[in-house]
Each structure stands twice: as C-alpha cells, then as structure tokens.
Image (cartoon, rainbow over all chains, first blue to last red; front, side, top):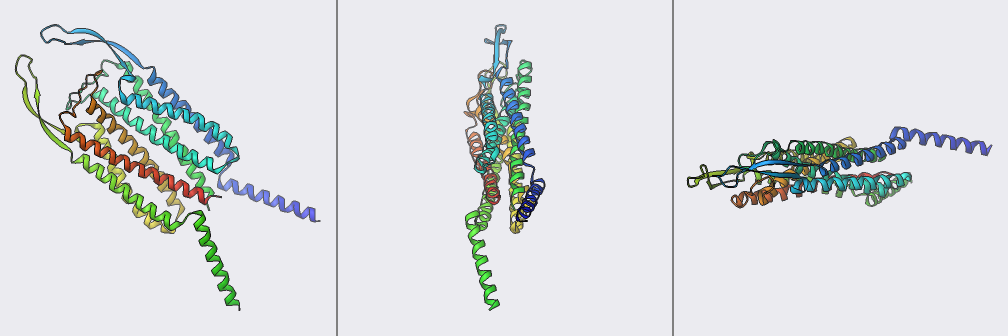
Length: 199
Length: 199
C-alpha cells in the first residue's frame, strides 16, 4: 500500500515537473537552438573574415607625377591590410569566430546546465555583439568613403577603380552584420530563458 | 495568545524575506544602481552628441587651382554634417540619449518590478549597445583616417589643419564609448540579477 502511494507521488511529481518545463521553456529546444545559432555565428564570421581576407585587386592607374608630362600608368593593389578599419574588422571577425567555436564546445559541455558557465557565456556573447558591431561600423564607414568619396576633405572615391574589391568588402560587411545579429539573438534568447526561469 | 503568535510569525517572515533579499540581491541597491547608470548613460551620450554637434572650425587653406599660378587662399570649414560617419555617430548618440531618458522614467515607473517591462528594458539596452558601438566604430575609423591619412588611396590627413575640430571628435568618441560601456554594464547587471533570481 505504501509502495503504491509512493509510486503515485512519484508519478504526480514527474508529471508536474514535466508540465512546468513545457510552460517555462523546453530545455531541449533551447539547447538545440543555442547550438544551431552558435554554429551559424561561427560560419558567418568565418566566411566574413575570409571574404575580406582574400580580397585583393590590382589595377593600372594613371598617375600624374609632373604636371607638364603625360600621366604614368602605375599598377596599384588594393588589400585589406592597407586600411586600419579593415584590419580591425578582420580581427574582430576572427575573434568572434574563435569564440563561437569555443562557446560551442562549452555549451555542449554545459548540457547539465551549470549556471555559472551559462552566465559567463551570456556576458561573452555580449562582448562579441559590442566587438562585431564596432568592427562593422568601422568597415562600413570606410566602405562608404571608398564608394562615394568625400569632397569636403578631398578624399576621392576608389570603388570606381577597384570594383571587385569593393564588392568583396560589401559582401563581407553584410555577412559580419548577420553574424553580429546572431550573437545579438543569443543574448536575447539567454535573457528570455533566464527571465522565464525566474519567479 | 493567537495575536502574539501571529505577530511572531509575521516578524519571522519579514526577517526571512529580508535575509533572502540580502543573499539574492538587494532590490533597493539594484534599483538605485540601475537608476544612476541610466542617468550616467543619459549624460554621457548627451554630452558626446553636443561636443561633436557644436564642433566647427574654419581654416584658410592654400588651394592650387591652376598649376602654373600661385595657390589661392580659400577659407574651408570642417563640420560634422560633411561626413556621413559623424552624422551616424551623432544620430546614434541622440537616440541613445532619448532612450536613456525614457528608460529612466520607465524604470522609476517599474518600481513594483513588472517583469515584462524589465525584459523589454534589457533588450532595448542591448539594442543601444549595438547601435552605440557601431557609431563609435564608424566615427573612430574616419577619425583615424583624418589623423593619419592613407597613402594607399591618397586620402590626406586633415587633422594637421583642423586641430581643434579633431580634438572635439576624439573627446566625443571617448564620451560615447563610456556611454556605450554604461549600457553594456546595464545589460550585464540585468543578466546577473535575473540569474540570481532564477533557481
């Protein structure tokens, strides 16, 4: 009789706890969406860094050295290393990519749900949001200058000459922006998850 | 006798709940630090926007129009409206400042601790982190170009001419960076707070 009663208690408890999980947040769904988002962030930041990293274009530019002589045709190469904003952009994407890999491993290791590690991941995700958005801003600002130029400071546009290079930059910025939005989403999901768990 | 017992129960309960609050998180401390940080973010983004907004410098620049004639002395003005990155920077700081004001009001109104509003504030704080960091990145990238120039794309430095203007920009970027770190801290504190509350 006692055994039956105990079994009944256990059954009720199990049911109650399962019921709670459904209304609070399905941990399996949360974990797999977290895993997929981290994988997506890894891929996006990796491809963004590579697309800008391999961008290199050489064009022959007519250069006036002495005003009275005809212009010289000089081969000029455009590389990401030549512009500090692009170097920063590639570095931020590489850091975010490395972190995404590390966090994937940590989030798989954290299946048990150690809450200290989960909190550390939220804060580091937030650092990545800040880092990637500053890198995107820097690259986009220089990209706009290259595309349109600025007559006030007499900086000529260069995208009319280095068209392929500029398209690489634009694609890379879009990819990195998507990557930073994934990190943004990871922080939002973690906050929602913590919020649902809190009383 | 019953009244005494009840009073005793009330007293014990009050003590317990106070004890709980100290170990979990003192709501008064959390609320006042949240209030102070929002006030600080408001002040920093406001001053950052104003410092760049009022920055304007006119200098006489020797301009060579025809190579055979002596250069002309032309007055040239530097303004934030002339550079799209600075316009974006001022707009992001203005948005962050307006949001900081609104969130101050909301966080005072939310003394009762409605959790839906608290969650909305975390997400909007996060949006401000992303927005401000992208604005800082953009302004810093153009600031570095103005300070050092770039020989590869033949963009000359301008900070040797517009010294006061460049110092305004640098000060504004530092203020805005501090402002964005305050928003960063607000998100971290909210996450810590939710984390402490969750079982």
